[in-house]
Picture (tube, rainbow, N blue to C red):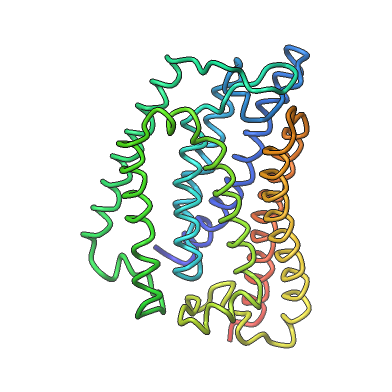
Length: 303
C-alpha cells in the first residue's frame, strides 16, 4: 500500500466511525420525529421501526473498530476487543422497557432465539478470523509492533481468551447471554475505548514504552516520545482533550452502572448513552484533526 493509500484509509476509517456513531444516535431521533415518542434508551430503538438504523450503525462502528490500526499492540488489542463487544451490542437486543422506563417483565422468546443465533454466528466468525490471522506470515501479523516478552504474550492472547470465555458462556448460560449480554457488553466497550483515549496521551505513550510496547515509527503517538518545538503546543492541546475524553467516558460509564442498579426508573439512561456516543465522536474527530495537522507539518518539514 502506498503512503497516499494508507493516508486515505486512515482518514476514511476514522471519519467512518464518527458517522457510524451519528447513525446510532439517529435511530431514537427518527422514532421521536415520526412517532412522537422519546425512547427510554437509545438501545430501545431495536424494538421500533428504527431497528435497522441502530443495528447498521452499531455494526458499522464495530467493524471499523476492528479494522482501525492502533499505533501500539496494546491499543490494537483494546480496539479489537471493543469492536468484538460492539458486535454483541449490535446483535443482541437490550431488555425492552415500557414508557415509564421500567424493564418489561417478559423477554420475547422469538427475539431471544434470534439473539442466540447471532451470538453463535459471532463466535464462529470470531474463531475463523483468529485462526486465519494466526496462519498469516509473521510480517503481516506483526505490523512492526515493538513489544516482546510477557506483554506480547498477554496482548496476543487476549482475543482468543475472550473468544474462549464467550464460547464457555454460550454453552453454560446461553439463555442469560441471549437476553442480558447487551448492557454489559456496551459498558465494557466504552470502558476499553476510554482506555484507548488515555493511551493516546503523552503519559499513556510513555507508560506503554516503559512496559515495552513502543509505538510504530512515524505514527501519531510516536511523535509524543520526542516532541519538537513546533509540535509541543499542539500535542499539549490534544493531550488535554484526550485526557478529558478518557476521564469523562470512564466516569460516565461508572455513573451509568451505579445509577442503573440504584434507580428504579432510569429515564436518564438515554442521555447517558448519548453522552458516551458524543465523547466517542469527539475522540475520533480529534484524532483525525491531529493526523491532518501532523501531515501538514511533515509536508512543510520533510526531514
